[in-house]
Length: 208
Ligand SMILES: O=C(O)CCC(=O)C(=O)O
Ligand SMILES: [Fe+2]
Image (cartoon, rainbow, N blue to C red):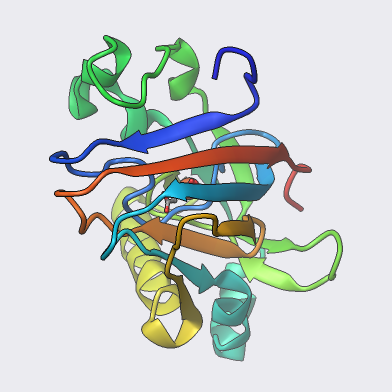
């Protein structure tokens, strides 16, 4: 927003599919210091649909067996915005001002950062899995197929309904979440309706 560059207006017009945050992810995990918290305010939400689901990566870590935890603990993974934002594979409409949310293209989408697969929360001291299908590219030191298979298993286990909760928005709902131990998913099931949200992300620390 012009006057408030730290606020993003997330507009989904009526008659279009949603595309912002519409698969599992942890916000900005492709940064060296990813967002710790995200604050999202619903100004105009659809009468049905448009919920957001959250999965506890802390719980996902806790329910893994001891041998699997030992195997995962020393690993790290490459994160990048390239898969999600590459104009060659995701189209360039969003960079040409043709979409409701407009983006400025930067070569920085191809930058890569390595984060631990298991991170410790700086406040609670508790461990969480830290991978997400939107931005995690590959586990360091594994072959591509090994990495893909292991990540698929972790995504599968960590997004089981038992580990999730769901926010149903009303006009005026404000949700604040902690990206250091959660993934989230904006459900794209309200094509007929407009949805207007305001969003702020808070800079976090380097995951350890
Ligand atoms: O619109 C939503 O419900 C959430 C979208 C999202 O992923 C985000 O704001 O970080
Ligand atoms: Fe998000």
